[in-house]
Image (cartoon, rainbow, N blue to C red; front, side):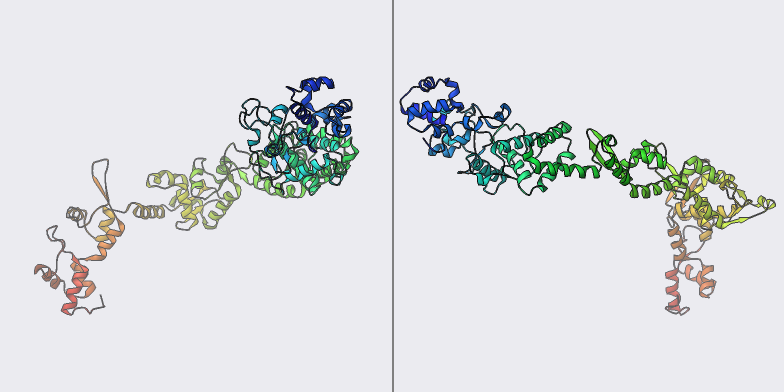
Length: 621
């Protein structure tokens, strides 16, 4: 019998070497049914009979039966350990010897330490279950494939999968030096099972070289890869840098939305509390719970069972109820303040409820600022009444930034106006308002009349107030307390600014050009036809007349470039007749020639002739 072989494997080989067609004869001799033979659950009586048949000492045989390991275990513990009919194997080991190794039949054993690879539990070809007889024969009972040809996943020696399996397997075979905190294999597996249940479905906390294939802790692993990853994770939590890894894992668990979290936590707490062997875990678990209380991670009804912890919480934090009572802020407002991240409470999900804990010092500071800002907000209607204007006029004031529209943090029904900006606008106007007597009001135009009269010229409330604030126009009032609808203005100043603005926006009209160049409308029409001046736009009035618009810069440049004989005689101190003579003799070009009877020279050409004749010096243009 091989040292690492299971007793079932030995019996199957024994039947083959004795040229038996099946194991039934041996089973009959032992009083064991044929389907129970692969289970490797031979008691001492059966081992004594096998010993008489094989000549091997019964104690040796019994040590290779799972009966020795599982004897005294509860049904629950047996399920943790025992595969029953499932067979798993290492292809390389099978290639060396066609035997079933004792450790392969135990659930926690997932890898071959010798070849550093994950055990497989199915035929690599047809994926059917492998049975004991097929394993001993080395061929699949379904597809006849050589089972040693199966490929498995390699595991590094430094991988937690390998380290955890090494200690586990050494402990099972009786190496007490590898005992983890003095725990027996049975106690250790019970602890692992409890941890599997607690962290079932969680992503792996460790990196392994096979993590891309199976990366979750599973309470009921579906294959050897999942089982090996699950065991490695619990090993890492409890026996590698304990308690740090354990506390990190607990923190992840508490922060998760794991289903039935309360139930899992209670099961785990009960388990470690009823087994004194796990006091080292219970101590850290209780310490972690204390930290949770300090961080507000407690049930809402903590006052009913822990008055001391509840008092500590009140000294450190406000609840929503506290804020409502102290600052007169509704629960709805508090919720919206949290959604806007103005308040940043500790949001603690405990037993399907979200508890909010607000740091006292920080909350008092934030709410003081918030309430101050909220009190600064007024509605458009309130602002309009304060200023003495219509609500519609507020739009223009907002567009020109004369008043500031703000969104309230909480009340979203309509936009608000900053009261400070309204007061500031009145203060700016007050600086420039001049007091007058009632008798003087006839010389001025009142605010609303001014807007009504010049609205077609582009006058709006914002523009009017901007002129008043910048002192481009004078503004008057009968009252010390200013209301915009009571302000009076000088109509001439307004007309002048509107005209200036019209020129800047639309350019010169024909009348403006006539004033600038000194020509009549009739002459200008002829100059337009001759394309001496070119309008930038033409519109038709209601009575059908053409209305021309000219680029201001173009007209100013024209005026600078051309000069009449009268203006030239005055500017250059020369004889008017001489200039006309130059024009008649074609010495100097008349740009009005063929257009009208007027004469117009280009300054540059005139100055060149006058310099040649010695009337002006070069550089003295």
